[in-house]
Structures are given as C-alpha cells and as structure tokens.
Image (cartoon, rainbow, N blue to C red; front, side):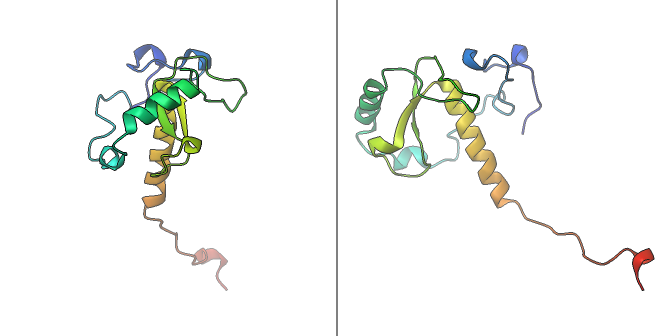
Length: 132
C-alpha cells in the first residue's frame, strides 16, 4: 500500500460530495488497476452495449449512496458489478463515478488481500510467573 497523501497532493481528487474525506491511498502510484487481471477477458462480447443501457437507465449519474446518507452528485462513468463476480445481469450492475468506483474496488481488493493473508496465532503457553 502506498504512502498516505492528503487530497491536495493526490493525483486522484476526492469526490466533491465527500469533501471531508481524504484521497485513496495506494491509487496515486500510477499503476493500471487491470494489470495482471483476467477480468476484461471475462466480460461478455456485448459489454459496450450493456454499459450504454446501464448508463441510460441510471440517468448518467453516479448511483452511490454514502454511509452517512445522501447520493453522490457526480456524473457516472464506470459500470460496476454490485456483487463481484461474473453476473452481468442488469440487476447486478450500477453506474458509479470514477472516484466512487475506485473506492469500492480498493475496498474489495483490500478485503481479498486480507483474506489471503497467512493467519498466525501466538503460542498459548502461560507466562512463566503464572505457572504452578
């Protein structure tokens, strides 16, 4: 994970709707999010048509609802899978602005990295002063 940077130094500006939050640490490095991924090859052949349909359905606006309430007011740019995977049905797709999509994808990536971590457990031997 990259070094933390405040929004004024970040290349990715925070969503104006969330003006109190900081930029996305780790996304400033300039690497492509799709590098090493097979995701693009798993998209259906008519993905461009599906994207157009979802953009039209969602009114070309970001549909993200924030935890603190309120909806993002930015233009929608990225079609997102609500439940990660290969379900490309309209019910599982929504339109997000690039900031909200990067934030959601970053959280999903962090969760995946966390689940793949080797879990270590400390030994359960009692402290020597507490032994009988």
